[in-house]
Length: 192
Image 1 (cartoon, rainbow, N blue to C red):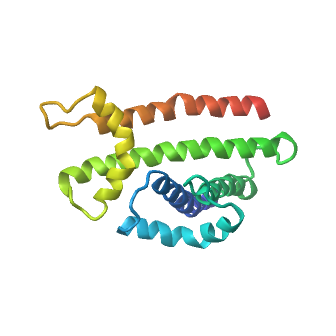
Image 2 (tube, rainbow, N blue to C red; image 1 turned 45 degrees about the vertical axis):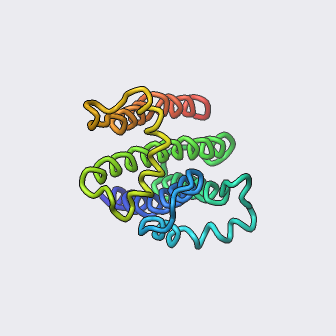
């Protein structure tokens, strides 16, 4: 019972910051606007760590590498806290460190796919309910690069029913079901 509660608290704390750092990085890469309530919240949650980190890891070619490094570090700390507080997984000596470092990359890939699913789903729902809402520009900027190629192949049905959000969500879910578990299995075989 205590172990489950501790895991829940770790998931809430590390999940909040990991996804906030990831969203900040994605928003900057896709040139999404930060002048909206969600963008301001992301900045408030992440500035304390990203700004000092920029002194060590400057941006390059318009990409904020400090935000990406912060995302990776928090994902790494999330997995490390599972090991230290819940005592499972792997030995931290020898190949265990390499396992932890690569497992954090795979977990980061999963987080990015979940972020894509959530953004596309929220964008699709809000486009029906509140198309001119305060975060509609942000959601459009985050989802459009993924929806555009699908819309070229599958035009809206009857001129109004856009299936591209559903297709993107299905493809992201398939990526979570097939290649990501395969990567996790390969990591387990290599290092354990």
